[in-house]
Image (cartoon, rainbow, N blue to C red):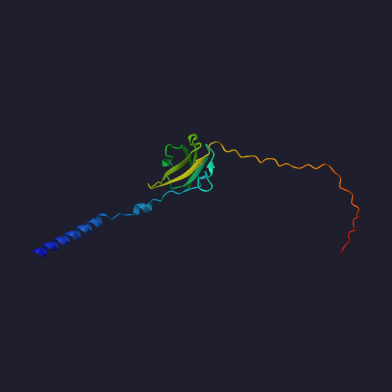
Length: 168
C-alpha cells in the first residue's frame, strides 16, 4: 500500500508541475502586432561632452514620428512642465513642433516624449538640452585694418624691354 500511495503522490506532483507550466505560457503574438513608433530629426542640439552645445531661449524645435504613431495621444514634457505642441500629419509621418518655454532659460532640461502607437505599444525618448542664459547673438566679424600706402609713382626702370621673339 505504501508503494501505491507514493506512486500516487509522485503522479499528483508531476501533474501539478505540468499544469503550472501550462498556465505560465504567454503568447507573444500581441507583441509582434504592435510596432513601436520611431522618432527622428530632432532639431535642437543635445547637450553632451565635449561640445556642450546650447540652445537659444524660446527656440522652436521639432521632430518627426513614424506614421503608425497615434498623434492624438503624444505627450511632450519635462520633469515639471507640460510642453505645448502642434502636430502636422501626413500619410507616412507626423511632425511635432514646439517651443522652449521661457522658464527653461539658463537651465539644463530633459525634454521627454511619450509616443503611443495606434495598436497600444509606445516609445519613450528624451533629449538633454542646455538653454542659454540670454539670446545668442552672432558676432559680426571685426573689420580688418588695411594699410594705406602713400601714392608713390614707381621708379623708372633703366632697362629697356627685350623684344619678344615669335617662335614658329
